[in-house]
Image (cartoon, rainbow, N blue to C red; front, side, top):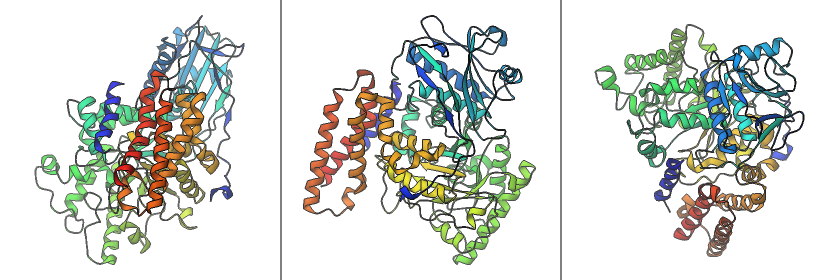
Length: 604
């Protein structure tokens, strides 16, 4: 916990429609009467109580992520109650009160219960990442009562376990934002929960512009041997993602960070956590060109790489891609196809647009051959994305003959407004469509890396619109180095999991839901009001953009008065925050408000 507080301080030094949109029916209806209480009734299951502590069983033949999630759940229960539940792989160890967490078809004890008709799993076959939680109030073997967490696949099981943790009061950002869960002497579970199929298949984050926060912090406090973002840091990132029901990542890729695949533990770790790995719009075929081509190619291949231009250096680039795909063939990935400059520049090649278009078509065809050869099946069966970002959009519009099974990922304008969405024909593509959306941005014409100030309302408006236009296959959010965007990331992942949360009314009220989860019911009103005012003021000018916005003298005065009032409210409320949540309040509420207030004072 201490290291994350130190990370929060690193940020300080860096700088002082929708109402008419209708929802379609989800593939599986969500059923929920699951409840957590401190007091028992005849139908409740005691996770911990004065008289009993439960046993948690998972099958050692199940996926690694199930073991990871159960151990995290054990710690969550301890952090809440101060009591340790027991974990076992031994079916014979089943006691009076047993939790069975497992994946259907991979957990012997769970499959026994289903076969014996103790439970009927209401999750339909082949539903992606669905899960079911229920209490069985009749004896089975040595157990008097059983709490079942059943996943339809490995991520479904992990999501079910962490779903229960969140209901018990453990925030997804429990570690990242030092959020101490409320203490309870007893924990009883009753009822059942059937998850819906996720609204968006792949839901994830892009760690970007990590130079000033995440990378130096990880080097000093997490991966101290390699002094970089490595497996110790990614373990915390991946756990956060599972708690958020996210499943997809574009790893950190700036020049300060070595490639994700450079540390061989990283891809194995991602697979253990059941996280799908991809690459950003400028990192085709899981290659980090900033490091692997520009810096490390000679060490890897024993010769200089030559020019990063496919029409004059095809053999070297083809082998470079092919070697990575061979390495990645055993893992779950989504492969970015196409080509851009080494680091987010335009694709090198012929000067005329038609020549570039033809070259890009050749590149994608060759990339698909590599995928097909290395996986031993048709490229159409392997998840791929194409991101028409910046100048690539103009090449796509010019008539790029893109295979229908490739998912098109539509980018925003870097400031939260999606540039283009699929037309009727594009919505018919078998590969579907998705969105690349910025909560943080570095680049022209003006970046914003320091504070996160895009409101849930704007995120919901744009992403709801995207979902209505069929962009449902993959959503990836540029989250900078994670720390400044906790609320926005959580809202984005909640919405990607369940699009009904994206109505504008629900989006505006999300600050209340978020505040209650972390700080409790008594503080919901004032904290939500502070966050909403923070978003409102930033909507007319981000703190990072104050020297670029032309306010009148009267507007400046009014703005400074509002920030001064907001700062006073934020400071006065701090005395009401419990001691164990002071760090969380500082990181999530005070720091962004005071940072924005001081930047406005400094510039205006």
